[in-house]
Image 1 (cartoon, helix red, strand yellow):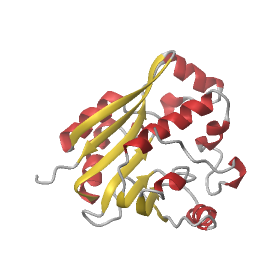
Image 2 (cartoon, rainbow, N blue to C red):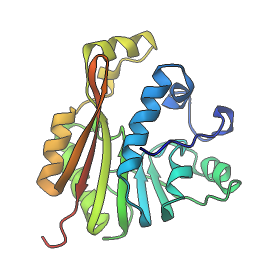
Image 3 (cartoon, rainbow, N blue to C red):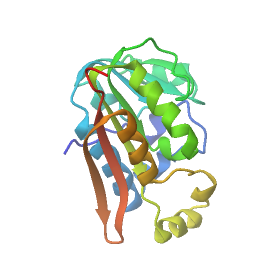
Length: 213
């Protein structure tokens, strides 16, 4: 499995204190956060262009640089210039925009891969189909979409509450709803569960856009 290449925590810029970046550096919880990203990165097969939707502080960019010629990113709230500066100093030149997965501001058939880590669960179930159709539109024929979504469990909900976060105020679609919606638009390759001592807590889905519709 791919190992996530993280910068020192203080070097990341462009996100507010609601971003989960700090969790990646905590004991125990940090390993879970890193592993879910590593599972998703391991499914990315490389190519010319990748679009990461919800890229946040850019924690995947050092890994993605190794297998894609161009890294593009779309995020609702980050400070684009700050994130770009962090990585440009390290020879990584992501092309970033603010925007929404429901209205992706790119031409048809632009990307080899679209990556979404902990994004689709924030959509209402009736928004999933629109989002996935937009993702399909910007993917090249035969292109892949790789997503990660949590599997909500009671212990996970309680753990987040101890950290001051009520995830039920932010997560509106389940892993099953996301997978079912994806299968209406794409061909499934596999869905990979992340297992812990309390059972499955996360799933990474890998789907392919059909070459001919």
